[in-house]
Length: 489
Image 1 (tube, one colour):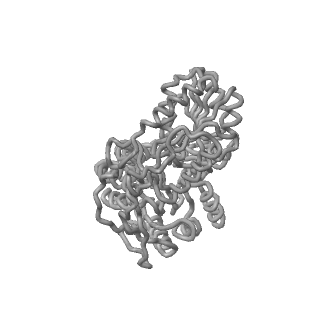
Image 2: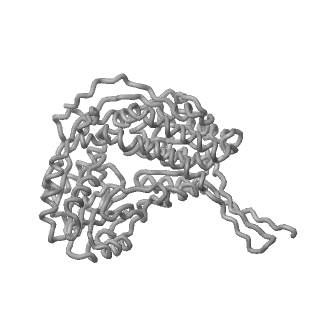
Image 3: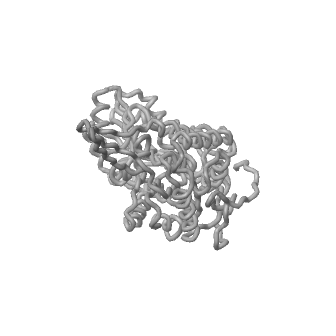
């Protein structure tokens, strides 16, 4: 059983125009603690009216407020203070994130929350390094390229890394002088609610950041994507939702940036450091219960070492400590919801019919009413198995043998997704060939999840549209304008 104490149910309001406000309808929805199945918060249910109110506040703050007129360094100072306050409230935010998501508290404390602060610190510094292009084709002629804010931007974020991915969008959006409306995932509203208080303490002007809680389709999310005063949408989430947002946004010709689904491949060649590759493959497959778009959710192993690798993988997977997310010894927590648990279990049923289950794949009932599932490993699956081709977003790892470099490259690329992959080999030429040949936005060589925030982040094919990170974020959250001068000499 989990040892969590029963907590007081909180009520989470919207944050519009610098104030916490209830829904106009008075309606709310429940937020569940996935480790216990209990309601831990009631959340104001926003829709079209609340989006109208939030967009109006953001538009007024952009057109009449100080934020777009501030110097870059003045905005950067406030962004840095937001990052500092996130770190100062790290324990509180980590508890809230784990309560919402069911992820281990150690991941929240050492990963999600510090990285959220880093997003603000990074863009506070990086925006000040942004330079303008100047072209002088003749002595009396000069062309200057400047970047100006878009105006009101809509940000829609997922439930798997709630605060981290919200700040990944908010920080560069605000750095460029925009105002915004954030629609957090309805399953994980808590840290967005707390962030509103943090930005107020940091001195962010009213209306610059607005937060509306609610549903996606036919709710706050759809109203945000269709609003004519919203000039861009940045969305991270499921591929099908991305298609719907693109269709809605096209009616008002908004800019869009999408980071969508993935089916990350981990490829282990016989000449790799096998122990390091196995350790990394397990981390890539099961971190955050496998609920990461960058997860290494299909494992390809060269035939000559398949038996050894599979034995090592199974041994390590069996040793993963699944339990109460608030215990610091826990290595894997609960899945996000009953709905998602059912989805993952439907894939386990397919795997049991088509292939061989080596370990795991069972609901852990002794942990109580939470949505706990033991991590699983499958082999002997047919090439067209849904476990290999579809995004499961859970602790399920299919292992696929391969004979040649050409074969595995073809199989890896035969996917609708193209977000990330990892290649393990000591042959630098092979690593180069594979990294060039794999059709994905990110390729890691002998590692996983190594990140530099200056580099572009995003996917190919059904894994996304556009790139974010470093100057790529700043360019998305701004418009380029050319100003041309001609002088009399």
